Image (cartoon, rainbow, N blue to C red; front, side, top):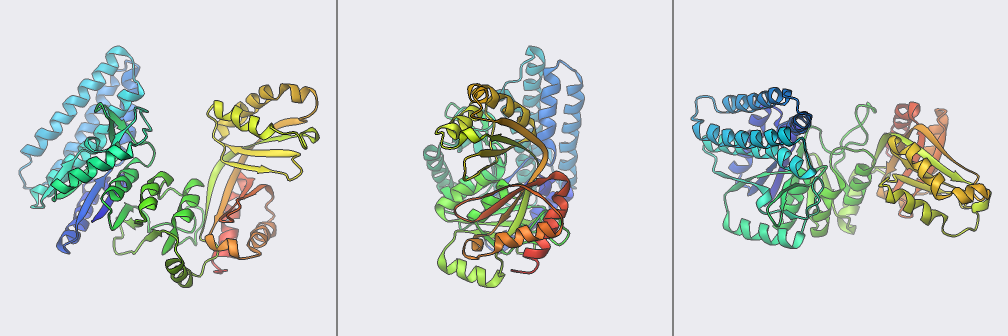
Length: 471
């Protein structure tokens, strides 16, 4: 079994959906056993959130936006089914829009949009896309079933970013797929509580759906179809020479994803990693391209892979805009508990720390956070360490804005001396100053904080001097 997932950009309009159906027909002709997960049509999830928020304000313009969304879906139905009977499909879609309309009217009346209600509203994006695609395939003689994933994927009630109950979910998936042998067209992103209340899986939810199902049925592979030729060595919008990689390990992919690579999200890989199922990133608009394979690290596979690709550094990713909180003072040296209190204070206010670096003298600690958390974090820490500031144990707490983080990633870096020096030399030769450096003990990732204005120049310098030379 191969689990295929197509994102919103792959189903942005009827032409793209036709291309996807052609890809599926080729797989079916080749006697491949497939299950297919779809996201909502492109921009639809954002539109549903916007409509919900307009209704919340008791603004009747939500109805205009709703009608526009309705028109979009019926237009796609017509274009996908030229000359075919669409009465059954129209009836199913009309029923979904009627239900959605009632929910939005309720939001309008009570002026309340809870996370639970919002999950219910945005779930219609995937319900509509999968209903339209599955019925259009049936109209073309392709036997398939439309599966609402909320029936099999069970979660807690943390609406908006629900946690999966894997014990129950895996049992449901296994039981369902044993009884249903036809091709399944599955709604991505959505799930439900044990009380059957709709939940969603958060950012990258449709990818996650594919991985959850793939792991539960021990799939041969999970394919994530998007709009690029796999995982690239860098963002092509910033680095003109960026190119797709043949393969990366789960660890490399996770590091690249954490620091800004948008092709795949880290939670997606966890079910596959546990079952050692390969993930393949493919391009819907260039299906002949092999894409990038994400595999478990093993001596045999890794040796063959390294021999073929020859890269010490696999990729460079970045977080374009961050702030750096610096806590420093000579009185901190040898004082226990400072770091613990610092992290706890920020965690209590739900401020995520992207990067941490500390001088070996314990004189200073630097934390990279999102820009909106910079001044807030500073205020929190000044309150937490008010006595230490008065006693001069801590000299100052400052925030520096307009910074970026660059992450240089590659498993082979850990066994290759001099890589860090080459990276610093590439930046130094281009007069780029480094504000902070962090490197984990695994040596898989070297992270650098630099001025935001130097980001493009820094990415191109490292890519040209390190990756393009296949060091």
